[in-house]
View 1 (cartoon, rainbow, N blue to C red):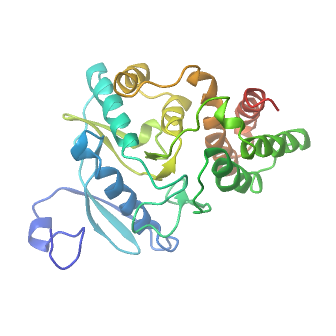
View 2 (view 1 turned 180 degrees about the vertical axis):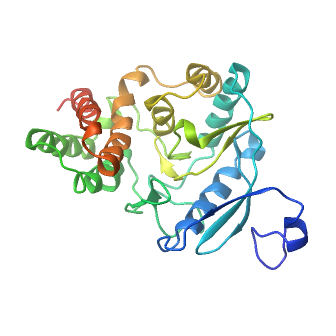
View 3 (view 1 turned 180 degrees about the horizontal axis):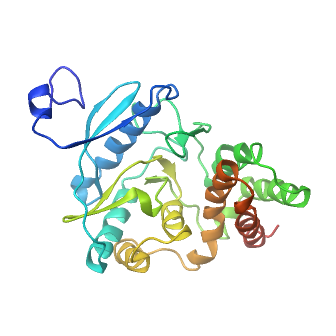
Length: 276
């Protein structure tokens, strides 16, 4: 590491390392700095058993240079180990719901060419955070039918009134990847390596819901490994549509009407779960 600039290697060392460069000259303010901060924050948990994270080699306003990750085929053993490691990453915790990694001044979610800027406010409870910093901002961006718009408003009110606790003790904020679809799970010869986070303090089911949303290889083995390290509360699978609702709203915003039906399904299931 260079002594002059944290997170950068010297030119001589960089020449010896295979790299992957993400670059966008018109990137929003702090976009790559935020991603780098998220990777480092998640990486802090690796020493205590957390998931492996791609190494940040260099970052500036227009690009992010990462260490190359060798690819390998997914397998059940690596999936189980990843589940256990993800539980350890979550257990590293966060100061609050919505809390950003140190050094991240913004919160972005979505692909490099269409990142969505979302509020970076910090909340003490999950329901208020999820309503005000995730669902409401996206509701303003998408075209939902009137009935579903009203249902989403009612769901947000219920969340802010404590519906997400489902009569049980309140969940504590986990240190989450935040965009854990299968494309951000790299299978290497040494196991899973995480890339492209939207890291923040969040509900731990947010990551598991994203893995299950479009299907990750050996996802049930990932879940089994997670539960072996950090048992999930009874009935957690019924909560998954609530945590997938955000992802479906994002896809509806970015990709249009093809995602209206799954968004509506997740919204109705979430409303029923929360007694709306």
